[in-house]
Length: 281
Image (cartoon, rainbow, N blue to C red; front, side):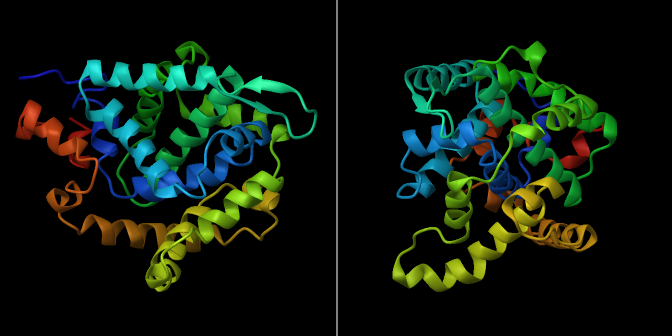
């Protein structure tokens, strides 16, 4: 293989899975879930202007995931170092106690990591992306790499489905849908848009956001104060959406920014193209 395959390499589950278009819906689910940790969401509210730069924030997150998945080892390590450096300079105030804390608190980093990676895995599998239980465990184990990049001790990060489920049971009493979470909820349903784009927001974006929200675990629906939808209905909608999006040719989908997959294929060769069937090899 010519070129640096990066931290994950084309032999990983992550390399094949992160090329799937349902990752965008999974990312929105992660935002809904992450907002339920009062300290984590307070860190976002105090240190970013996501209401005015929602698209920029989304693209920066996509760029980080794309770089760490498909970029060179050097690029991935550099992206991780930048995140650690920024987090190390930022702090927030606990909304209940008034205590000042750093956003690089390991407990907060672990919550953000687990909510993100669990959302990716949940939406991909539930929408029909073919992963066995063993491959799902392998995916979680691989993401101890991304956890290290943001400053976590890989040994402290859940590396299989059982330990991930145990983590969510442990952290559940700390979660709440306070004012910050509700602001995120409202924003995700009604992000600012140019007047000419409001009809498209109502028709397209709101459907995507509602589907991402519907895929949340039951306790999240309870905290947000809305009835949980019928799981079978949500699964059918996720599968239908996944089927539709996967009908768009990959080469066309990969033209969307930040184009990390196309650059990885150019660096490593055509055999590096991500595809679900390659996972079982």
